[in-house]
Amino acid sequence: MSFRNLYDIADRFLPESLDWMAYLVAGGILAFVVINAMVMSTAAYTLFERRLIGRFQSRLGPNRWGPFGMFQPFADIIKLILKEDIAPTVADKIVFTISPVVFLVPVLVAVSVLPLGDGSFLGTLNVALVFIIAVTGMHIIGVFMAGWASRNKYALFGAMRGVAMLVSYEVPMAMSLVAVVLLSGTMSTLGIVQGQHLPYILVMPLGFFVFFTATLAEMSRAPFDMIEAESELGSGYNTEYSGMKFALFQLAEFMAPLANGAIVTVLFLGGTKGPIISGPWWFVLKVVAFAFVIVWTRSTWPRLRVDQIMTFSWKGLFPLSMINLALVTVEYFVLQDAVGALTLGDQAIMALINIPVTFVAIYVIGNLSGQKRDRTVPVPSPLARMAAEAD
Image 1 (cartoon, rainbow, N blue to C red):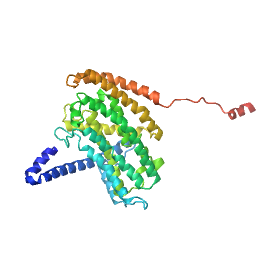
Image 2 (spheres, one colour):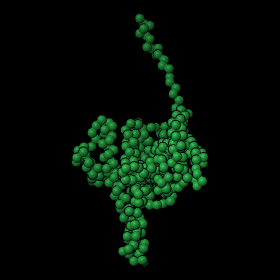
Image 3 (cartoon, helix red, strand yellow):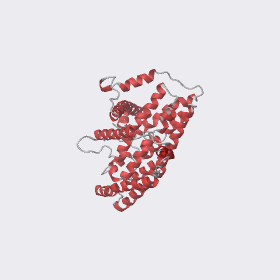
Image 4 (cartoon, rainbow, N blue to C red):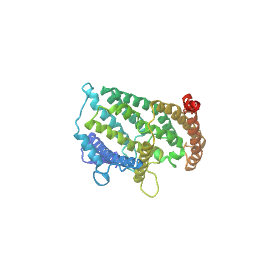
């Protein structure tokens, strides 16, 4: 059901002088569906992540509330609702209150322009990619507002780390998206899906690697979770939050993998394309696969230091994104037809070239920008020979 369908239905029951109300009704219905669908999906995802991490760590995970622990997300939200809402006396109350909303809204808005299935578009924006980049970058404003308004040095440190990390990883992410736009010839998410005769993860795996890594950093997911480093900052930017405000932060944080999984599915995994089963099911399976990889990464990688994260962005991902863009540009101008389009055969040729180039580029840049492995030759302490010399 598209926005146009809803508008046409509402317009039949309203006089011509109230056309604006038809827009309002159609938009309200879509917003209601999207918000509730995302909230319920996030509740299911929290259980999925906690149970999966439990398996990775050889334990059961939450299993007390309901069969297989299925009611655990509802128990968590009831607990947070019943908790007392406390704010520091010195906090900026207005900014302190609205920052969780600012943190949550961009995630919901970004979903509104994604083609979630054939004929079920929530928006057909022709510059959807620019819209997504602009909207998803706004969540860091909520992080900084929370850290600044709390008047807590640990919260402010976490917020400052978040801003620095976002600025650093936005650049390679944008460079990888330029390559996507170049190949598809459009900034519409629908056009990008239709342009993938082969999924772009095969056509330009280097661009996918850069985008996936930058996405992990923007979500502050391990190994880039330094803005909430418990051992250093308590809980980072949300240290002073409790009750429903803290619940909104947690909702946005656990909703981000689903939203970013949908974006990655559209840009690199072919969207709803797939054999045998219907398109929406393919879309859901790809998002779940993306979420699984994120949880797997969180369970197996240790947290990086601040300097390591910054070095990895500017000395690792940025050169890789430049290599990917240059390579895709040359291939596009060599293989394009008279109207600037690429066929399935052209994209297959690009995949055969770009897959080995990806491994070589990562190996070369990793060795050039990585830390030197200067192994210190062990020197025996003079005290170690005292006993032998005494004999």
